[in-house]
Image (cartoon, rainbow, N blue to C red; front, side, top):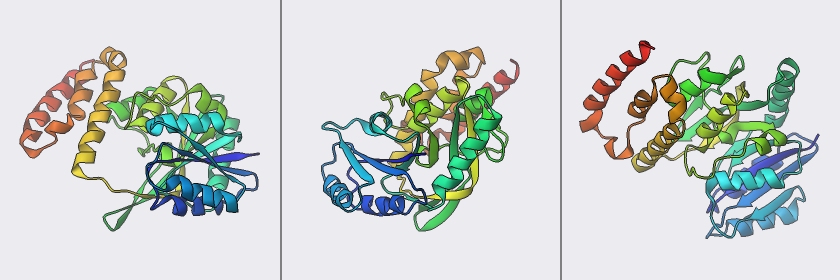
Length: 282
């Protein structure tokens, strides 16, 4: 069975060779390593081409205009020749066992369920010199439907908790072609995809073992933009949330980036508390 390891690359000349090195060390016989260069302005493309000359498994597709993560991922899904696809970010690293562990989890879940399955793995996150572990959603048991959607949109409790992140995701190429990424989003792309996937009947499965190392640098301005993107996701699912008397509550949870400051915290805490009580009346 062929597996495609798909990497989105934009101005990653300092890290792409490291990610490709970890991809080339994956323990899988029939492996395609597919990189989409999203109109980089640095030397990323040349570095990938150099590695491709050394390893025939590495292939490069390019964009003449920058399309963002969602656009690059959709290109990778269209160009993949594998039956199964796993994503990796251009500054992250795999464990050599990653594909064997996640493919086994996928096949096991498919034997037990008729729904499409997406498998995430736990990741080690290196940020500001510290390493933390982010557990994958769907660990130890598969999750889906309203429970996942309301967890991601409103912070409702979810059995096992955990995170979704496309950098740790593995699923069938046919699933990704059926559920393409929404290219109107530049951030929170993985969150929006997961919500749409589970509300269409998909299941999320997690691997307990940490199989991806994520190198993360998140400034205050990036956090603010990320929160704005999450509000954009909430607005996309306005009708769904209004049916559950949860739309205003979800907006209060994901306050605007411009208000992501201490002076507004008390106001938002008060509003959120009132809206939480309103939701419990439904």
